[in-house]
Image (cartoon, rainbow, N blue to C red; front, top):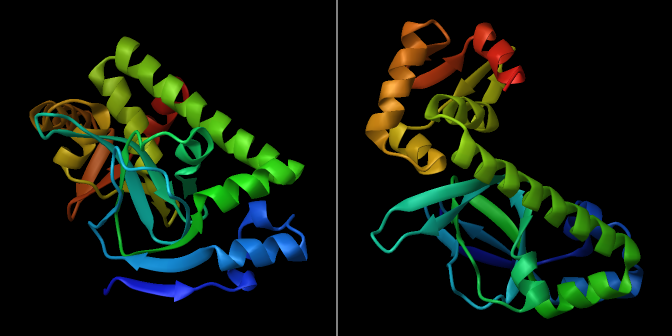
Length: 226
């Protein structure tokens, strides 16, 4: 997949909830300040400590938000999917990026000039409300993740992560991540994840099929009580 850039039209903006409340004049301003850009799997979309020049909306694909430690270790703090937005916090407070974002798959984004986006939200109360709600949900998740890291044992923490990243297929939940990828999300080592996965499998709470983890119904009941 080549790194490609396209000019945008209003039809793409209308696919995103926050822009459905824009006037024709606002749509024109947003369209003229936006592009569509595709990134291949594994490509860094934004770098930690960059200046917040743009806000990103995912049209297709997925990516993750990661922190990069001085030792080179990566901690994944959030997964993002089609329809999600990132980069707006830095745009509003005009601060350097606090994390990096990497494409999990070949992905396409609407990329909007940060100043134009902030101006739009400042002048459109509905857009401002949507942005505030989105940021509040993100903060709530970060708080819960920190609480889990501080108070839960690794097994409970990993079970929560398995459900967060699972996808449904034929009414069953599957996870297709390596132990190292799960370790980056759980802030632990690959060896510790392997030990917990082995224990869950031994107890019949998960099943392994062609490098995919299937979550057993019993684990679903346990997860609902965590």
